[in-house]
Image 1 (tube, rainbow, N blue to C red):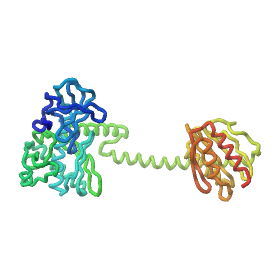
Image 2: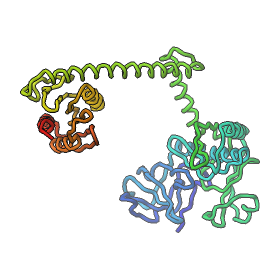
Image 3: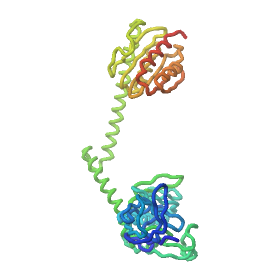
Image 4: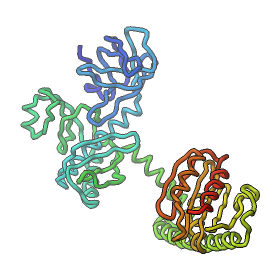
Length: 419
């Protein structure tokens, strides 16, 4: 038995009584089919209504052939129910959906751009067009749309045959069947639709385009209507007021103030990068010099624990091997340090850092002749991870921080051995 869709007769109806025709399971949730309902089932780009049946929350409303399935938070006890539709959500959907009708018509009328799909989202709605449109074209269509809204044109709904609808110039989708429900904004727009619409275009309030982009070779237009548009304008106003206060600027001068800030940030990053490069070169020079000065029996791993100073000794051998372990040092910074060390003279740099995980960076000067990727492969196996590289540079890591010193010691011994 088909469910009678009361919202098609009265989109302002929010309360109703109905009889339970069937109980079923829908994706693990209890659900019911009623003999009639004011709940809108998701279709045509418009989401479902929310509300309650006998105080039980309705979680979803979906079409199943001619029946409407109400998905519930909990099972219903009785065979007769009282339904209440969320009025704020219904009003919002009326505004967004009818605003889409008007904007789509204006885009077709002024830009020759036909709507191929529409989506009413929880925050913003979208129209996908069959061709690309410019900002100026969208602006022109938006002005036309709002003129129609503010003219408070009557909105009428009627059902006709397919032949009658096509005779009026309406493109009727195949799935509509022979009974076609037409929604008309007087003298402006006429199209088939099963959604909820207001009695007057004035109830849309206003339409605001909040962005557009290229999409599948054409255009996607993002928009807001009614209370959503007003709420977005208020929020943008609050954000702009905060920015003007933070930047000591007027609204009109905000773009220039932000650009100055961005330019300063770029300059600062360049300065910081230069300072970091010089610092790493100095640290690399000190580590390399210490490796030349120390004996092969220099300090053992873990003897100098500080967050920013190597905790391992720097020892000499053939080739010179620089081994250092750090705590909390950024792995990317470690990469720069390793490259700076091997630039100081012929050597192998074996560096590690513990940052919740064990990170390893191994490098060598050109011509030293050690298999750096093989050294790393053995080391990351000890810390329970993986890594890789080629030629004179390799990096990787694992979760077993406790074995980081052991991994470095093993790599150092292998690097000191003759090739």
